[in-house]
Image 1: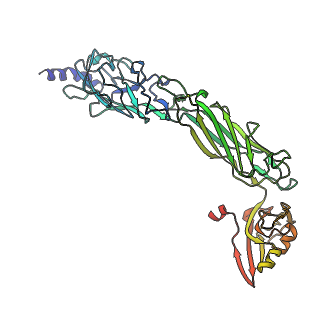
Image 2 (image 1 turned 30 degrees about the horizontal axis):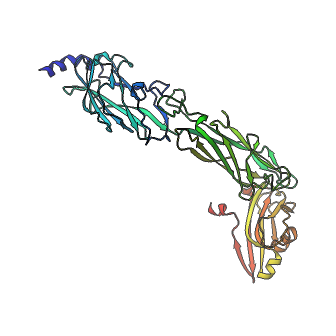
Image 3 (image 1 turned 90 degrees about the horizontal axis):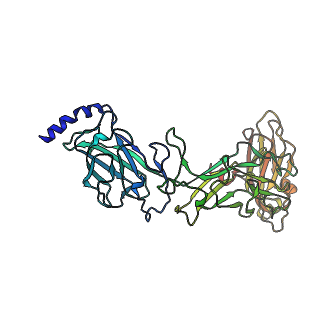
Length: 468
């Protein structure tokens, strides 16, 4: 009979909220935006740190009716937690705002499900009057609370029940640091017009920017939410960083101040990288104790060519690694590898592998022949050639040498081992790179090896070109 009376008394309240569902909002102290999750660093020592102190509202959700009032009689409030477990056995005091609250089921230490039975639920009239604070031990995953209400007779309350709960995200685990690598959009191009060729670049020598900051997350249209290092709302800052390591890979021949003493350099934010190595083709910089190494717009990476060594065509990926401070609760850093701008060269380059000079060919009985065709109705520009490597001991490489002033319209350029050796010297066996002042779409290029009257075609290109 009591149950029937309770159900009858609740009908008007339940009908008032039937068009929508129970309102559940995250009000944990770490979120500065209403109902947003708390963005928490995902590399904290979750296995050893109990994120508790529920009385401080560190893991708190509020619940209220979508319209009207909750019933005046006994109501069951079910809560399911994901991404965490109860750090201690619950007592019922974790639910506040109603007249009374006791545990109906669950709520054991190490568990993640609890049902409270409350009286005076009608006092939960607004978004801040009734709250659920749970002492939790986090696992390192996102944390959600699912809340549902029903009468002790089993009738749903505000379109929710113990089997139909409303879920909100309480904690969102995200990286502590944010790394941004932005390639420059202004072409960095080595020019044939420089002396020697390709020893200077047109327009600028900036490859892009790198920026490392404490992370922030934007939820919906809310302002960015800084990532926290604990559940008390403490933001990640520069104190949490031991160092930022930056390694850029790519051809460094023209920028190595040791190998190229004429003044080459590779710089970050206007300061030389710690090491610039043209043997390993890397530049390394170590920046200490900051999470904002470049500011809002990032710090630029650029180079100074030595003016003598040709600037190579090259991609320049940047690998950035943030190492947390020893005393920080953040126990793992963040890494990112992304592309800076690729350096290009004037004209079209064609690489011919496995070539030989006439001196080498006299021993092997082979002759290399190179043909470059011009498909355009206008003459192509000058043709340059360079020996990229050599098998001849003591060979002095002259670098990039102009081989021909042009290729006639609808014409061709044919070279062989003898003419190449006359231009470059006896490099023995090696790879040649031709550069033509023309667009790639207007050129054809082939290499042939002639041995004992037999002609064999050799496909031109670098390994990356072969793979594409």
